[in-house]
Image (cartoon, rainbow, N blue to C red; front, side):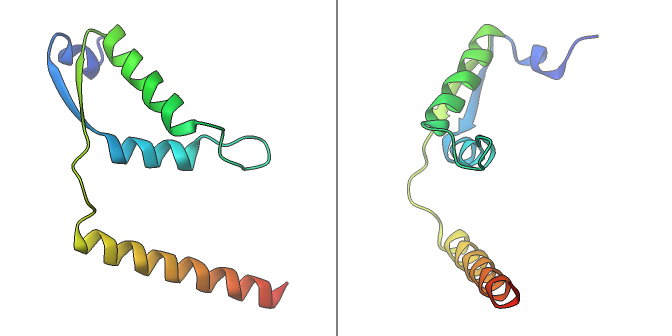
Length: 92
């Protein structure tokens, strides 16, 4: 059974660096829940190595500033998270 990644062998694949970096910041945690030191760099390096191993030619894209719509979304999320934390402190 071949995987879909094998269909990318010997092809270029554009990867959005910002999405990957955020994934590693959120996912790579130690037993205390703290981010693993250099998690974004380690994760990016490991994924790129895996792609090269599978004969995929990654092109890493850093597309500049965050769009206005995404900034507003991030602000709403931050506000909701802060509000939730305040409510938790009140009930604790």
